[in-house]
Length: 451
Ligand code: PMP
Image (spheres, rainbow, N blue to C red):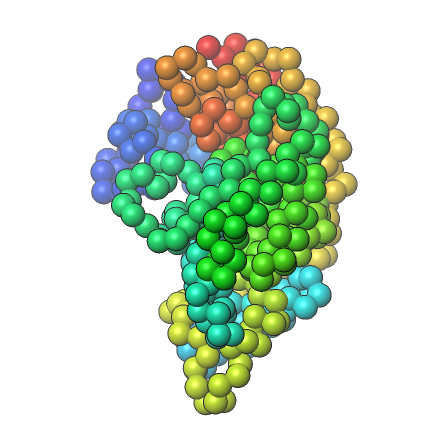
């Protein structure tokens, strides 16, 4: 497909408009706008993408919070190449291949004590669906089949399956799609600018918001509630941090009422907070953890769900020749994904990447908060190697200001992500201090003359 070179009137996009743009219905994208001035990447290495017109773009978001070890790591590339040449695919129903068992074993060693069971999926959305379904089946297996309700949270993002949008709390992701899963309530989200603006790290204010769980439990009776699901740090709705003591309270209330607690760690898993998982950072252990993204460094799609042993054991009670769980995917534990996962874990271990965020967090925090005082900046929040910069919306044009910042950053060779009027940053964990300086230096320049 030849390209039509273009100079977009506003200089946007990465160079040219190929003539094959029409067919691909792009996800979560303004298709018509994008296809007039596309931004196309053709290469990636470590901290940078290369655009189709040969420019380097510093990756401030690790792709979509997923390329934690940096791009195109040769060890991962080789592991995938070797695996695809040796065995392309093997089913995981009633048979297996060694890589899936080894990856699960290595993952269980990273997880909290007593949480050793790993179910493989292909994405974060599938991990969430799996967690919710297993929660229902678990209660039923124990003779508590009345526990069918779920409790999510406003502004929560749990992927795009029907289960995930039902427990999720992002209005635009829900309102077009009908009645969804029955029996779901939502806790309030934990963000309040009046009490929390420009907090460094976890806010002091807001632990009491967890008490709303008691209200919901009282309303429906604990015997009807299967699980509570939250992101320990909500990423996709613009970096909402758990107030100090909040997750502890959720844990205590769930324990009191026999409710399972699910942490959706699709973003926070694999070192994002400077610990292997957010459960380690916060010292609060859920019953189920969902993961994806950093698991394979995003080289091959893969998700996983981690279960406390007691949950798995509840299914292992019937006749030994009976299938215990009627759930799974054609590609559960796909050989290419497990090869990528094993190579990724090796890099994480050898380079200390799962704790590198802890070493850089103070530097990152200071750099992020240096944006305070620049025009339009109404909040900066951060934890580990995550930052959210909230801009005052343009009256009547929500999202326009942050999207303009995104376009200008791209022009200046920096990839950021925006959600609403919030800029979210989550770089690869191999980031060096001079990259951090570049990210916030470019952002400061942009903010100084953003309309
Ligand atoms: N849960 C959380 C917390 C996420 O951030 C995401 C993706 N950003 C998902 C689930 C869904 O993952 P996927 O896009 O791989 O389905």
